[in-house]
Length: 609
Image 1 (cartoon, rainbow, N blue to C red):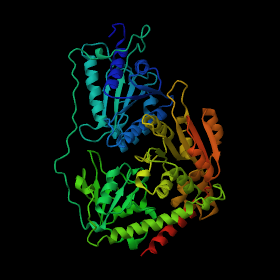
Image 2 (cartoon, rainbow, N blue to C red; image 1 turned 135 degrees about the horizontal axis):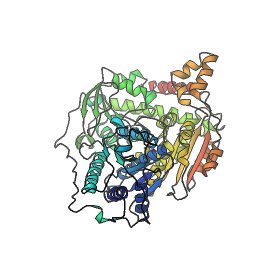
Image 3 (cartoon, one colour; image 1 turned 90 degrees about the vertical axis):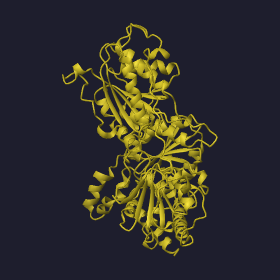
Image 4 (tube, rainbow, N blue to C red; image 1 turned 45 degrees about the horizontal axis):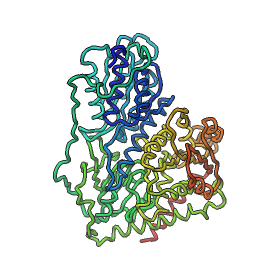
């Protein structure tokens, strides 16, 4: 490498080249001065086709873009067919300068931590002699992410000493192994804090980026081999199989549905579980669980993934007369909010998901009752969200938001990806997904940021997912609420030199936070006129934002639709670039409508007995 380069550039080039050679395909950069050595190296690496560089001016958006790129690549990888070559997971890196820039990554790091997403944070920092001196843009970045990262290291500023690059690459290799969970099966974010000392720029036109000679003489990369699963891992499960349910939470994967169908167990699957559909899936299960005549016979629940959507599910898992088995692969914490799990197992043996003729001690009556309940519930939801039910227009129709979610789901096929926002959109989708997909294989892949169930960075996450999915020829759409959209409106910003992406964002605009109306706060709001005013200001939070003008300011196409037919037409049209479809729905009666639909589902289920 050129002796004319300052140590900061030598180190940055080594980092970027090694990232590319170790399989990192995407790097997101939020520009800054202290991170300039990495920026120079990334720019040339991108020009040479070693990786794809994405530049964003807002660090929070950059973090969630990186998160979406990693999550989208993982979904594409899991969705490969039997004859397709499946790549190993590829972490995504995000680069920031020092100071508040690093802190702005914290929401994305937390989401990656709770969902096990490989994310490599490369944070530039002041050299040690400037820390604690009042130097501009300097704070204590070491350990800033606390326990939310799998690995954290503070790398001293390079000064050109012998062995420096060797040490740096060895440290980077440990960070990548930790991000991928190669040692403990617990992937997630890592933080590499890179101190740089002036000069931070090349002294002359930048020399070519090295390839093989990035490594010092004699450098040997360590190969980290993941631990093999324990042979014969086949835990015994509790109780009469004829009294067992499967709960598939976020990220459960198709194994949850396979086990349910092989064993003849009813399946309660969240939209982002990857396990939706099939003959055992119970529609509108949140309302079905209110029917004690049905749920009273449950003895055992097997949990896959992280259940996050439903209080009724959590109440079921907390019952002292129900035994809970949690399937939790890897070395991370397992989901057990009720502290009621009797067994936590890393996996179930293949025989549990192999087709069997087992129907349980009662001859299959238990499963038959749950299937009948699911059919009855689906019929109620179907009637409430049909085209006829909202024919008068979405601005005044009851259950309009549910009808929007159904319309979005109805046009999606098995090759499509849907990113769904937290709060009501994911719960609406939970009720309607599958109504228009009679075959389980027709369902789209659904992704949601359910690690902390926040609305942070959803537009940026969807953008990252769309980039990853496009490489496999898959189309991405997003379904979000208006507050979620406004919270990450900056995610729409893309400079003219950045890679374009096709993404359709459906915004369900009810001018505020309708999720709170369905909770206890909504009930208190109806108790008095003063209660309604308080609710509207501190929970409802109407904003009156003009989304069309906001999109115009970002140079993003916007379309307002007022009925389901127009929405489906817009969704079936080809997507070019980022497009926002705004659908306005009422919010005032959300609590009453939610309770009415739940009551009708419960009544229909009771009629099946």
